[in-house]
Amino acid sequence: MPDVKEITIDKEIDARGSFCPGPLMELIRGMKALQVGGVLAVLSSDPGSAKDIPAWIQKAKHEFIGVFPEQGYNRFVARKTH
Amino acid sequence: MEDRMSIIVFSGTVDKLMAASILATGGAAMGLEVEVFLTTWGLEAFRKDGYKTNMKVSKDFEEYGPVMMEQMMAKKVPSWMENFKSAIEVGDVKIYACSMTMELFDMKLADLEPIVTDVTGVATFVERAKEGRFTLFI
Image: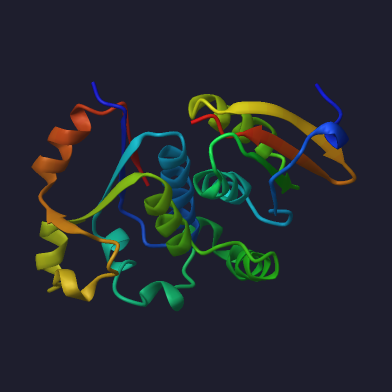
């Protein structure tokens, strides 16, 4: 997994404090609005996101760049591929 | 077989409506077609603006009701109605009202929340659910 500092993030959505499936919904909305090739980050403190977000990205066939743990939350980073 | 999940919502208490709405959202997010069949108390809960004052919880967990409502408000948990709306926004979700309940409660489609798009009979719902992946009764 690359260092998060080396990734250019086009848009970051703060979904901390939002409950399952809130952060996933934010990610889906964010992906819809993003241009193809763009990189989206979503911040989530919901433990469900750790499995739900990568599962959705795989299902939707986007590129999952990684999950980067921060203090009390995770930063999920993905690239829109189509 | 079609990639569809079917949900029969019979209950009209907030705890169960919450579970149904989150499952519908998950299904929609994962690209399943979602069909919701509202019957009896589940349909009653979809009367226009009814969700705003509905504070009912399951009888067997009644004592948790006030605490649950308090926590949901304090943690700004979206209402079950908001969840159904986001499910519709991200996926293919249809919400049907049971024709028999409509008749029993003297309801018209116009009396219901606008996210309820059509009235259907049980036979039609079952026929479609048969072709889907799984069906939940809540």
